[in-house]
Amino acid sequence: MSVRVKVCGITRYEDAKAAVQLGVDAIGFVFWSKSARYIEPEMAGQIAAQIPPFICTVGVYVDPDLGWVEKTIKAAKLNLLQFHGDESPEFCNQFSHPYIKAIRVKQDTDLLQYAERYKTAKGLLLDTYAADMPGGTGHAFDWRLIPQHLPLPLILSGGLDSSNVSMAIKQTRPWAVDVSSGVEAAKGIKDEKKIFAFMQGVKQS
Image (cartoon, one colour):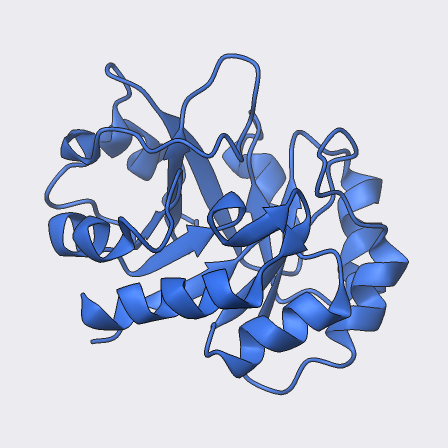
């Protein structure tokens, strides 16, 4: 079964278009204002309106309030929600959209416990832990920390690029991979050649 691919941190239509044409399954919009890849909901909506069918649009949040999530769902025409903060399962569950929960992995992270706590999630997105960053570190974590039988679909993130994605997939067997900085020319600006190389790495896995 082919591994799905999400390109996150989209801020421009031309980047979304290139990603879709190169075969990605999902694009992510960051709605956390402190991120260098933040996008206004209305701009995300303009991009989403031009995306062809069967491509998932994902809203990314860090400890948002309820009103902000509801506003962005409507403005950006989202299909899926991705929570990167300390949101409770109860918070994540209260919207009309499915969600995935991001977990920042370090040596003592109990991923099976997280999988049980967020069992209503569509999947767990595993990212690299950094004390001052909720995501987008550009660094990989030790994939050996992932349990062999995680009960939720695994979305692998953190420091992925064309040089390591094939190895990452072979080692972890994820449902999907999520990339942002690994396909960028600058923060928030994607590089079509890097997306192409990344997709080739996925196919070669």
